[in-house]
Image 1 (spheres, helix red, strand yellow):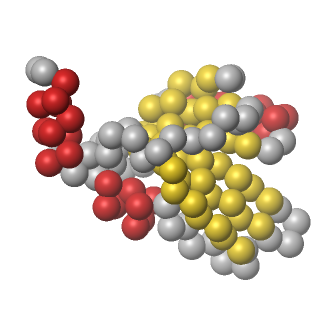
Image 2: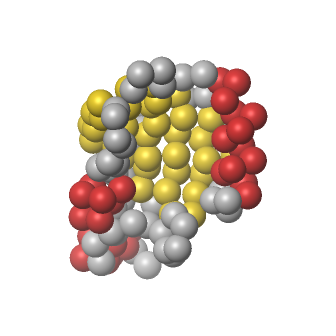
Image 3: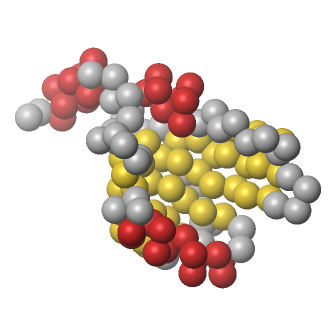
Length: 117
């Protein structure tokens, strides 16, 4: 398929070509920063659902960009969204030692591939 036709067909199908959201949450003793990069989630659902977490007792800030920022300590590529056919890349920032918990979850529960940038 020609590149222009591919772009057009993806746009018409509601698929995001390059869409990411950074979610920064802060609670009493926890601060988390991740970035979700859309692979196959319909754009409206990604922006209005996946990028709008409801975390009780935490302040949540969400920002959107074309791609996730540099500086993550790990990325779960092609993470499957439970109960759906959708996939996303999840970039993790902050405490690199958390990879010992995140890598097995990425590869096991999410069916993704753990990458250390």
